[in-house]
Length: 203
Figure 1 (tube, rainbow, N blue to C red):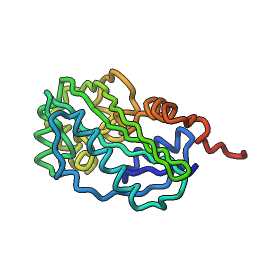
Figure 2: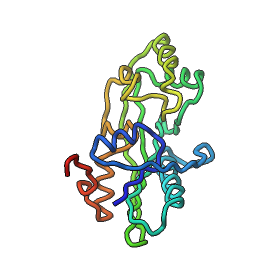
Figure 3: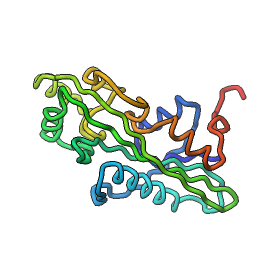
Figure 4: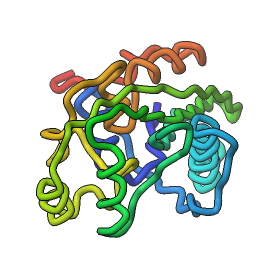
């Protein structure tokens, strides 16, 4: 089946490729900033669904496919924290994160369509993230890399930010932006075996 990733995130694409899939990317283009929800979990799930449905609407309605959509937010004291965007926002974010825990929540929305009939499933995964007691100088150096500005929560664990994350509780893939074990479970619920989507070289 055709596998579609409804996300522009290069990290999510890398994770899926490393896990054996070969998705094509179809970006939804929704305005994330215009979406609100009562909790970080609800926001992540709502954004994932909106992204997925928007991407699905651009595809051939008769084609069999598996569509995967995700969105991540950082839950900091019950408040959803997205992409900082500016140097000052990154600076303030990291001053509030250092030497403490926060929770990265990723909403997952899956569509499986066969013979023109679509079925969906959704769920959220949450991973506890422990942040190092970084100095102001380290924060400024991180800002200078440009990495934290356009990622959920203003950090990564697979780039420059890895040095500042001292522990995780839960699925580490989820912090990159996509929980592979959760996707396997959601697809199984929709009758698709994860291993059937593997692209094994030489086969």
